[in-house]
Length: 424
Ligand SMILES: Cc1cc2nc3c(=O)[nH]c(=O)nc-3n(C[C@H](O)[C@H](O)[C@H](O)COP(=O)(O)O)c2cc1C
Picture 1 (cartoon, rainbow, N blue to C red):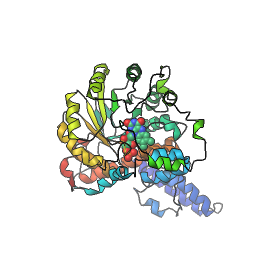
Picture 2: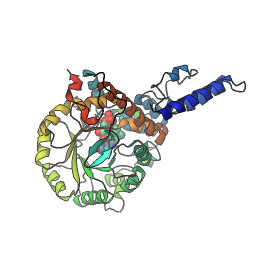
Picture 3: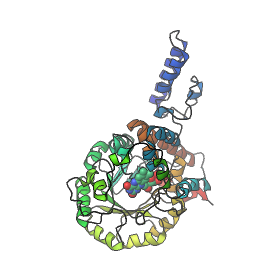
Picture 4: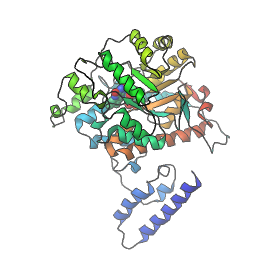
């Protein structure tokens, strides 16, 4: 912790003692103020035993402010409370029995970390450079569609938090905000995730628009070809008394045309974003029109990774769509090694699915990932508290990551090596 934040903590402690001693303050009022003061610093909570010396603060089962969160999972119940059942169901759902969704995270518990001692780690650098752009952290924001369903400020709030924390961000084709607005809020170009339509003219226009907004990478998502059974969403929708038809008029072109990336495009011929019959020929076709980097998201096997190299792909995101594509039971952290091996350092490999702790992040980096992406956690923060919620999620994961970087004795990302984990 820096000297400045130490001093801030001391000031805060003194002020709280003064309040607690004041005859005009009730215990409840002191607790409320302590909630916003003691926990106001992203570094204070859970990093410092000062929190133990503060008066007890009952939080209950659901946090009421971002500062009350001890870890990113604390935001999920708060998101559930804030959202209508169907929207929470959309965010929470995996497919079928949600087993792959759970497996993604549970797989991290089979990987142990080998820590190193007696290395001066007081100053560490967690920055990564991908495609010539440097980010303060290897934790990026995965593309998540329709964030307006979670909070009115949607992707704009996310981009603002990402700007402050230095996280890279990927915008979905079916986001609730245009790439121009997100780029402005992020204060830097974002990657653009492409769902190819079944009308090439529309697809081409989307790519051109993203590139005009400065997107250094087009991320083609390839894991949504088979349709899916989002059972948790369907179950929770039953508890939603609102009339979904008020917003979701039905008809694919109707749905698509509500998303700002389709503004001014003729979408009358678009019938599908997902099951478009796409093959490697499509990747070649796209490769020819994408001026910057082309990334494939949704690769989980060495066979497809090898194919991606042959087709001039610039990076891979190992992903099963957060357990929302198929019930494969193949956690992405377990798929990562076969993809890393096949790629053999030729292009960056990113990975997402179930990252909830800083320790999860370091495991992936030790196993050869260049960076990781998170999906649901930042959306929980968004749904519950808007931009401050996203900022808190990013701060907590970063704080945890900083801690484990120091414990393994890594001063920079390049110092994270395979021998820092023991698998199996
Ligand atoms: C509500 C929701 C919407 C998503 N929308 C997209 C999308 O539009 N495009 C895409 O490539 N992936 C999408 N994903 C998948 C994420 O990019 C990412 O792969 C996944 O969330 C990572 O797993 P995690 O949620 O466990 O972190 C979505 C995920 C969720 C939860």
